[in-house]
Length: 452
Image (cartoon, rainbow, N blue to C red; front, side):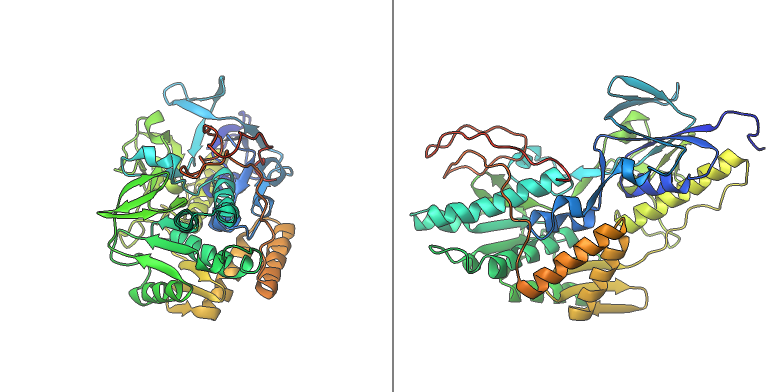
């Protein structure tokens, strides 16, 4: 039955990630009153976040204000607020002291880093999910080279120039490859007392091979490519301890100035807000239309949901899957608001797996064919530029990549917030406070803002 003569359907979307963004866009022109909530004011293109962490791109190249994205969508209201609870019985979203009523709720709150019960490691081994994470990692990398140039003790210098990436999935592989390019090419002629090319970069994976979801031949190619770039690849190696001075792999101790965590994720607590059934990673078990069983007015999308494709395989937690989910849920809601029949159950279309290893090297696995090396690298680059929002971002990122390819330079190597110096402790993550180091007084400097 059509909703003629009735107020528009009140739709609240929590999270402006890929899923939430696509769901909201799909509701343009629908007879709904749409409210989009996010604790940040920007949408982030996470697949390129590692390039911000390794100084290849600036935050503003891969993030866009949510208000700008929806400035022409008349039925959309954007609120920068952090959701703390959902009252599913009263149909209220609680955010920053405000209760927002809804008829339909879309939860796309994503995931965060999983330390497998060792949450204390987060302070010394940051993950990579936000702009703040990326700029903090970038700062640690660049500061390590600067302090190695000043160090007089050779063992301390080696520690400063040792970098560990934990996790051999696409994020870990891309981070390790980008770190190698930064040290081997971009920095090689800029220091006088240290040789950045001698930096030790370790990629640690607990499983038997890198890129476990890729075909084995592409996994082997990625491993060989990383080793040619100078990355030390350790498979079947589990981190047993992680602290400010390095990591332990069983009985082996590796002294390192910087550790980056790319080993696992856990869903946001949104599932607990509505009392939904969840898996071990906190993801909500959804119905065929991505609604929550028992709550047909609540939908879940992206990394927050666990679902299977038509072949019974788990749907991956990547950007294409989140976009497809969001687009589908938007169509379901639009049909409901207009009184039309709902579309058939959600069907995921796998668009392939892509991972870049470094300069002129990437692996691509699509239905029917596989690419690697230079051809895979071009395909990877074109695909990522295509998914960026807005013509300006596509032009800027393409130019930055072309400039880096020709000159081997990185254009975003700014240290925007210097932590207190210490030869024994790693700099804490952005937003944390450390005691002044023994060699220098504490310094107060401006903190870079997200997107800036």
